[in-house]
Length: 91
Image 1 (cartoon, one colour):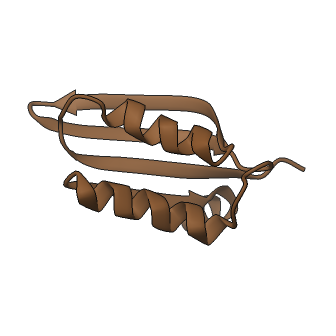
Image 2 (cartoon, rainbow, N blue to C red):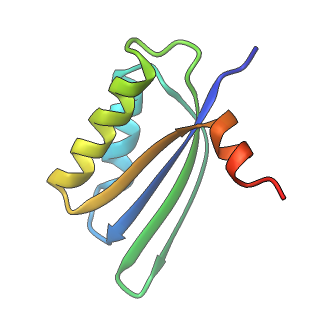
């Protein structure tokens, strides 16, 4: 069974946001499957789908590390399990 997570990133656009988040994913063996990003004026928004089957930490640690990385760089980074994401967005 595939376990996936949705990572969202928002904040002021700066160089290296995608690299920073994808490096953290690689460090914890979360495989990036899809990425969508956009910049509106100077605001950055990104959604990533990542495979978390082989992560080297528990899920809450990954979410905490991402959140802390976002705070260090003035970004908001959320990590949500795909099942929860889907439940929240069903009509």
